[in-house]
Length: 447
Ligand code: DTR
Ligand code: CA
Ligand code: ZN
Ligand code: ZN
Image (cartoon, rainbow, N blue to C red; front, side):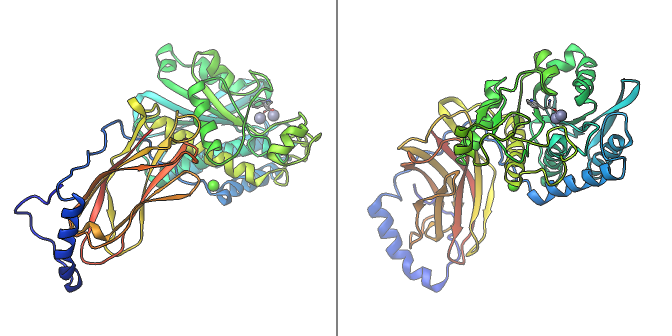
């Protein structure tokens, strides 16, 4: 690779001029001035990485739902004032964040029920990704795990989309269902009101009903393999084992979508069933005790929440929404994942990172994981480049030095066989000396 003739030589400090000659000689010796590593393979851009969903935000919503119940007869049940107050709370947050919200009315058991639907403007409306949770409780209590937890998780993911200004390829729609506890009434009403054309546009529906059970298990719906894989990879990349949700189909709001032929998935931390010894060994908690001892009881309040489960499931939900709405959910041919977003590299400043979320690649990464890097820079000796695996471990690709050439267009090979393939990988780049600058143009992973 050579610096194109006639290109303005970049400004350099006195220290660097002295190194220039040595650097050039060094580069000639290593062939870097002549060998051009292939540019990264082209492929569909990989999904942008979802932001972390702050646990504090989730718990603040749970506190609000608890207060709403306390101010309205102790519950948030269908037909009771606490339910409508819950709808108003969620709607207020979404309206303020820029969503287009719709309150859909229906009648059940002689009372008016409400679904809240929130569309994030933009994206291909012929390709809709939905995430939802039922907002109603049973009459006996505040319904914090069942299902303020899922409602808060979906709300906080929606707010994270707005905060980040995420502009997904697909259209995002979020929903909070009424009267689930009466028999999936709100979600059935919504799906039943869709035309066949509207149904065909929904690429997938993600359901979150009870995601913070005190004696938590980590269950993934196995209805659609593609969606299931997104969730399982996310947990596997963090060393959290999962099981298939087996409390029976039809037990929550994904059922009407599935019956309409729409791919569904979701997360669940367990209800009245007891945790087995084997499950307690892998997840912690207490064997022989129900996943949620306060299921449908008055003690389902803000003390009936497992923070770790709530945090993990909130983050997993965000990851799934980002991954499934990016338009790059299936691995490009040959297992190449790429991020073409330009990232400026601060001259002599802090490291920057660029993410690639890998899905659909089971097991561990290969012993010869290829990392394509394309950095435009006026003095590549300034640059330190690391590949950071989903578990946070760093693999050094390039150190700094006196290599005065421009740009880094190279493919590095990393033995990543100890790393789970699924999850978010990051390229970390730092410019450790002043007076030259540049940006990351593109990078890729080939499995
Ligand atoms: N029907 C839910 C609780 C529930 C029971 N089994 C599952 C399976 C998957 C999600 C939820 C559930 C409720 O009481 O709201
Ligand atoms: Ca988090
Ligand atoms: Zn319930
Ligand atoms: Zn529920």
